[in-house]
Every structure is written in structure tokens, then in C-alpha cells.
Image (cartoon, rainbow, N blue to C red; front, side, top):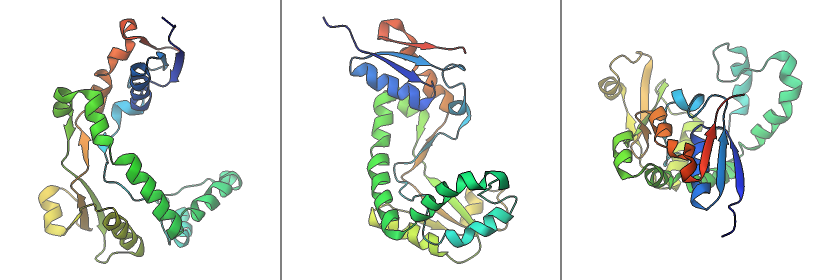
Length: 224
């Protein structure tokens, strides 16, 4: 029998462990290296979002004119140190180019193809009993201030409609029923019921510790 081809995976978070499992099923001998061990970094404390019906790219038409205000706002979504701006400028220019509507639609199509089967992949990796224990398809909610949809939000709505994704608008009272402590200036929301979350991201990785068993044809190694 031919010896299995060896593969090294760097990182024992969710991406690394899932990759290792798929490779092992294809017959590779897999070693996973991570100084922190399985789920020792971001995969321990992230939100565990499951987003099969997320099709909206980050870059959207009209964002360029928002950039100056974001940079001036210390709590804004974009921060670039002045000394770093020359190095960041090429990336920022590419980001602006990706916000053209035709390009946004292409990226949205790619996101749909990538995200669409993700729940089935999760169930297959976890196994049905653990999937029922850890996965919750209860939807995801986005919230905003103000009373009127922005141009970007209208583009987002068009992308969801293009892909047949159901979304429900939420008013102030509906938001407070869902989130009793939410700030009063949050007046609008959008529920995408087809999305969900994992109740325990670390438990997901712990369930994949079979990758650390030499009998399974793979090993996990910690340490620097």
C-alpha cells in the first residue's frame, strides 16, 4: 500500500481543523501545528456565526464619500495611522474599485456560492447529534440608527432579493422585544432568519480533537 502523502496545516482554529479533517478523509497524513493548541486563539472566543444567507460584500457603492468622516471619527469603522497611510493607500484604492456595482454583484454571487452550503458542511463535519446540540438557526439581526434606508442599505436589499433571501424589517418595538436593553437611538433592524450561530465555538473545535489521534492518521502539536 502506498504511503499517505504528508500535509502540514498551520493553525488549530476552526479553519485549520476543518481543513485537516477534510484532508484526512481524502487519505492524507495530516499534522496540525499551533502554539496555543486547538481553539487557543480567535476560535475560542468568536461569535460562532453561521451565515449561509450572507451575500453582501463589505465594499458597497457610495462608501468612498464616507471615508473622510470615518477617518476623523475616533470610534469610526475605519482607522489608519497617518504614518501607515502610504502603505495602506494601494489597498484602500483597490477597496474603492471593488465597490463598483457591477463588481459588487459579482462578489455577491461568489459569496452565495461559498456560503450557501455551509450549514450542510457543518452538520457533516460535526455529525448530526453534535450539530443538533451546538447549531442554532435562529437568524441574525442587523441594527441601525435613524428612520430612512441609506443608499447602501437599498443595494443590500437588492442583493438579497437577487438571491431569494428572506429578510424581515424590525421596528423599535420589535427590537426591544428581542433585545430589551438595546439603546433607544437604535430604531431599525433587519432579521435574516436563515442565518444562525453556534452556542459554543470552543466545543466545536473540541469535537474535532479526533484530529489529534495518531490512529486517525493526523496529529496536533502545540508549542513554539
